[in-house]
Length: 379
Image 1 (spheres, one colour):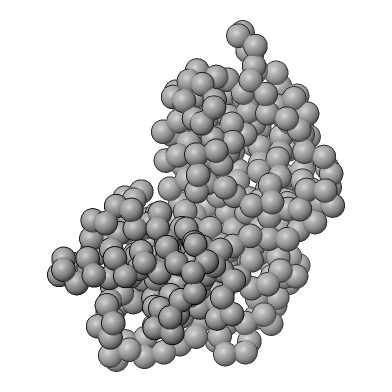
Image 2: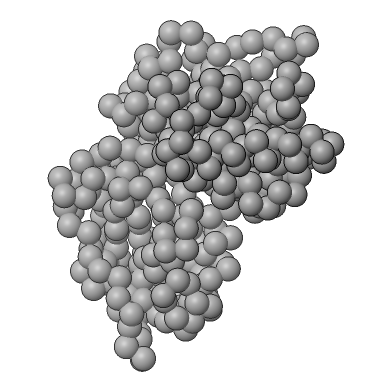
């Protein structure tokens, strides 16, 4: 079993990016250019490593090789993007790796690209990259190849040695449990459970009772053996259950207009631990968007657009409009779920403004709204 935190450290010890790993400061999958560049690197690393895994590390300041971290990224559908654009797509996985020195909401993203011994290429245009292009790695650069590209096995022994040196052990596991408990001891009720005598899973959250049922907020769940954070929530409410082989997370969100907010099931995640030392993570979207009166939604949408227009043109807001800014993420989320196709783009226009507000709750709601819309879109 590989300790992913140690693996990242071992990869970063090769200070310069090379033909088996790349590093980025942050993911840029929200626009066409960012998606295309990500696909280019996946394609190039896959083609240059036909016999071994390759990696992209996200949350690294490039010049000083400094670990700065990124927000938790829970998009398990990232494989869909690769499958949609690449011929002979490799299997990839995105994992959130905890580092004790980072703030609680920050992780390092680790993209693992599994070798498939096939030549990967674009099956359709992506930004400025043309259909049929084959990329490969030349040092730290992802380059379009010559016409007759052939795999060259140059990294297998190097990567095997790096992965072997990242093997987990009892000391790393115990240190991981102690680190987790120490970091969450104030008000988060940290707990742990051992599955199949192999996997140590820690979780913590703020407990509260709603209508007689137990929920947790600000939940943090970590598979300590691999130092991988499996789940993190800032605002939503979560129910947790488990048996001898599975750990089950059911995620809820508060949605509503004015004072009519209700809890809606969003997604169920089942972490199933096998006897062969492996585990599966299965997700099921449960969300059924609430429907509202079209006239009320039309009024909310127009009012929200007026506020966005004032912010983008730097026109002063009224006292009431300042208060309405706090509801923009939820209002636009509801509008988007009810057929207002431009609502998401309108909300994006004020991301910087919301991010710079003194009260960070609104920005958390912004990220939550975008996450819900991404899940609904992929499903």
